[in-house]
Amino acid sequence: MKNIYKILLAILGLYLILLIPMPQKDRAPQMASQTPFLWDQDALWEQLEITFLKAKEMPSEELDSLVAILTRDTDSILSSYEAIALHPDDNFYPLIEARFFEVAPLIAAQENKSDWHIQFYNRVRKKLKLDSRSWDMAATNARTISYRILYGMRATVEEILLQSNEDQFVSTMFVNEEPSATPSADILGIQVHSGDLLVSRGGAEVSAFISRGNDYPGNFSHVAIVHIDEQTNEPYFVEAHIEKGVAIATLDAYLKDKKLRFMVMRPRADLPQMVANPMLPHQAALYISEESQTRHIPYDFQMDYFDTSAMFCSEVGSYAYKQYGVT
Image (cartoon, rainbow, N blue to C red; front, side):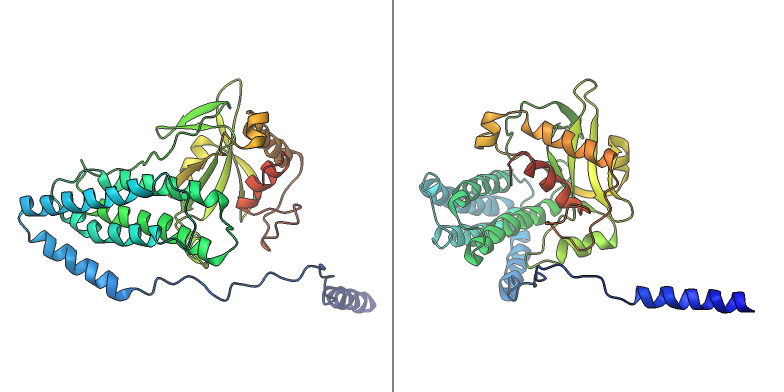
């Protein structure tokens, strides 16, 4: 009987110890933004649908002629500003957005579509990427116009693709072939280099929450950094999983984990660190690959960039590049 009391007292003591709160870090918790982005343009979306339905009823020659006029005018606007450095408050980007939205439902209704919408979006995307190098991306106006153009116009392109037949459907969009000196491998027809970041959208419900639960809702929920073996050219993917922390996956394992979409990202070759050391991305990928095999790195549910004892998915690549001065 005494032994039972001792066991109960030990359990009670352990329970009381567990009730003691853990020491808190000095940093204040990061608060959510008070101004999440909202399109708030329901009337416009309804009008675009009406335009699409009316365009479907137009004779093909008449519709094609109208699209040709609008695309030519829109191209002219872009060409006039393409070589001019712009600020986020300039009128150019809202104008381009409006013109693109105007012509998009007409293109979607065409029986014989060109790839103008894809090429035009890529031109605008490249310009914004170049302009935004001098913007303060912590400022709301810069973040908002970047989101509206990069996400809004991309979503528009995808709406057009949904109205395309199999011959017109473009499953892979090549935006820019950034030069790289690191080992490479072919993944689903795309030349991927060691150190590239593969941003993807998983098929699980939590992936939808991660991609959309943001002040600027997006289409991606996961990031992996690619390490390609110099001897075998075999790609390996270093990524953080909720259920097991940071781990290394083979190509088969990576592709088996359902991906609804993925995007390849690569550091610009003209970055000072890259000019000084073209193999930097490969070294960063090798660094995190070796570290993940040296110690167990659990998943960082607190998503604390400052604590690398645990990591969430985008922290893996960020941490690897940070070791080589790329932040």
